[in-house]
Image 1 (cartoon, rainbow, N blue to C red):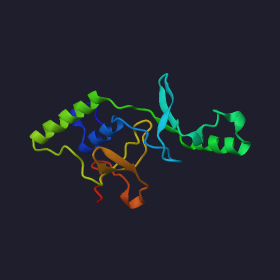
Image 2 (image 1 turned 45 degrees about the horizontal axis):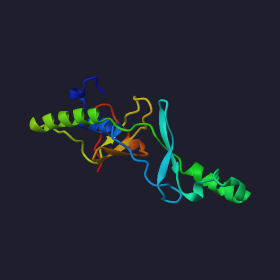
Image 3 (image 1 turned 45 degrees about the vertical axis):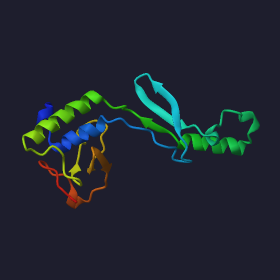
Image 4 (image 1 turned 90 degrees about the vertical axis):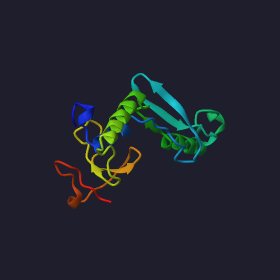
Length: 157
């Protein structure tokens, strides 16, 4: 990836935009209830956990059976979602401006849906991501025949 945003390929711009978009924790994976903030700040990821009564293992613990406490603790533990980034509208605005200029110049501003990307040189990234459109990627297991080659990423769709 280039140090200059103007030199980034459409797939690199989309990946960068996906890294800087705001993320919502979504519903609890166990029961579907709303998640609440369990901890935040201190330079760490924001941790969300289930707010439902079923996940409250500390509140009213003296009135719960050991089995009820264990089930509530399991629910609490399985509902955890960590979000390290809350987005950056300045980065997103810069990416939008680069794309606008490329479109005015008749260049490709967005990657092809289905295009594969491998950001592994960048810390914390997961290899072999398929572009889904709207600056979203999915992580994929790629066979040897689809491995990312140096140069332009392969298009599979």
